[in-house]
Length: 108
Image (cartoon, rainbow, N blue to C red):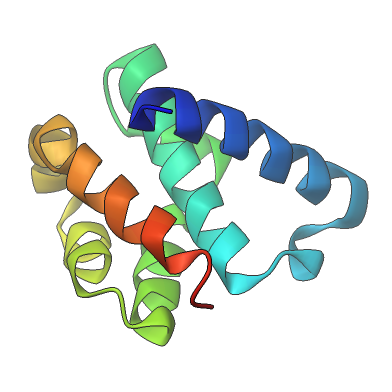
């Protein structure tokens, strides 16, 4: 499955789990995927991260924190970018970040 389809599919599953049980019931990996899904939603549907901020204000901070916990350096660097740079580099970095996060699913 390509990364665009994956983030939509897994993001929807995690978003539903969050709605049913709350954010506290998500694993760190699921929370990280949710942060990426929020960013992706904003970038693909609104062309920027303002919508992502509206959906989940802490998506960048939470994404960086969890990436650090999980030892995902590229993802940590990605979520640590300032919002303007993240928006500019989002599509350039998307595949690499998805791959790193997808590969971490079975490790964590």
